[in-house]
Length: 196
Image (cartoon, rainbow, N blue to C red; front, top):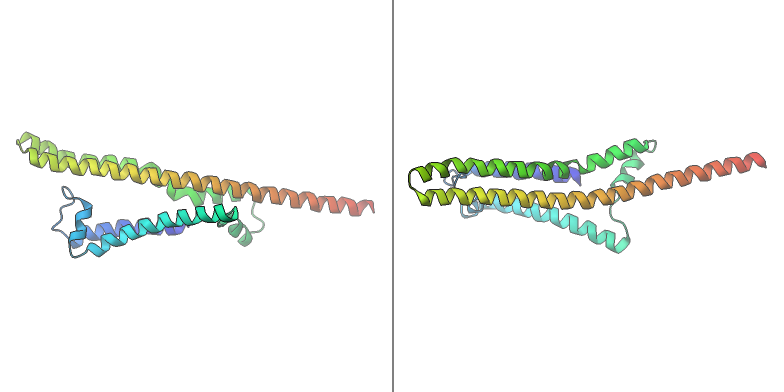
């Protein structure tokens, strides 16, 4: 799931970059990204939104599985089946790998929002100096929209990260407890055979 999320995030960024190149009539410094939907490459923007809905659907589906069965996908158990001799530390490292993208995005999105806010502030200040209040207002709209999008992105990824972290830690605890129980049972059988 984390690979799909990472590849999807890269695909969204590539689609956005492609829109900037394919539709130069929409200047991203003072036009909204959603205005690309009006151009001839609106399908590319629609593809980005479909991916966002897909990711949200994946989280809802996983939540429904957990509610219905008491557990959803078990990525750590699948990973452990491929590496049966993995240490507890290796399992913990796998938990960190599974959560890495959401953690990075939830921390970097606000920083990128600040950068995206500062970029249109220069033209807005120039517009104020020239007495162009309309130009200033247009640039401030872009600046505030960038902050809102970044904060929403950070909030969504933080929620996904927090929920997935809890799920993975619950799974990790169950796997480690199962290993301890198996080890204790095997040790008990060995001691029982020694007394017989």
